[in-house]
Length: 338
Ligand code: SF4
Ligand code: FES
Image (cartoon, rainbow, N blue to C red; front, side, top):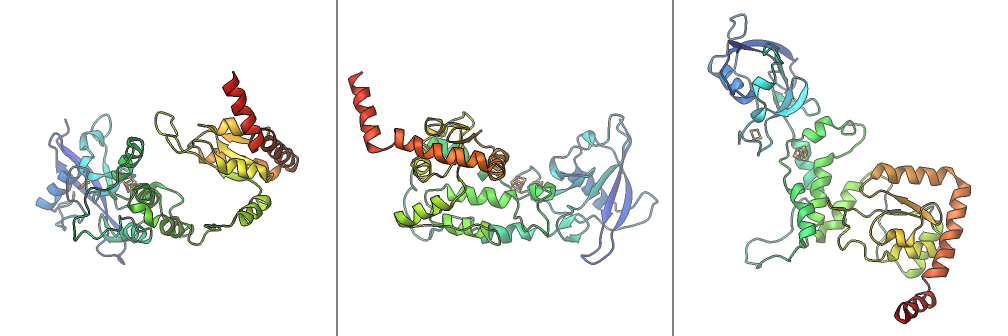
């Protein structure tokens, strides 16, 4: 076991100061983590050359990976300091220097403490809450299907550590992307039976500045107008860990309406959808929970006019052959007779 741990820490005395690096050698104790190592420095703030310095500023609270406040760059990787074990950070011979630096996508407050209020501002924008007045007893909330609970539970575990924002290349000043944590919370509250009253406001907030429009309460003629002008109807259906779409997809009326208008459908290959769309014949099927596959199908359709024409004509023919009332009644009679 080493007798000391070598650590280099990127420091900054205030938001406008230049960053410097200070080096320390801390007496080794088994089972130290990064927050206990920073505590040792606070007890005796002297650098490796014997020069007196100040304790390192950093955020922490729960010390058990619950509050999310202690995220920082440890050996260049965004990590929670309270659960980062020194023994795992010093290399196979336990002699490597550990480096600590503040998260790089957020303004430095001091040393390893950063201002992560952008996340909380984004959560306010998407109204990541259930809008109820808690001053009186409303009784138990609406029941939720176990499948929905299973989807919501992991989303409810977000601890606002901002690591997903730190590591995401799309989270930067140029894109305006809010980051995975905000989208996950919008989804969590949109799936809540009470929270879903703000569903559209949340989606509109996420779509701000993007070429997305919301069409609600349209008359039938307006829907037909949209579908006859659209290149495709994208109809993604998510599935849970067991591969089930739950109650999300019983028939798929929207794809049938689009196909009746000669609008090719890009749908997930789950539940009832493969019974409506035949891949490559009258539409395109993609694997569920696979956004890149959807993007690929859209680009394929856009690039291949002959394919689009073939799918469009076949889509209309499929509806005429299988989904008119006459066709449905005939199939029912056939089934009863069999
Ligand atoms: S979603 Fe992002 S902010 Fe939330 S816990 Fe995961 S990494 Fe941290
Ligand atoms: S101190 Fe709370 S997550 Fe590390």
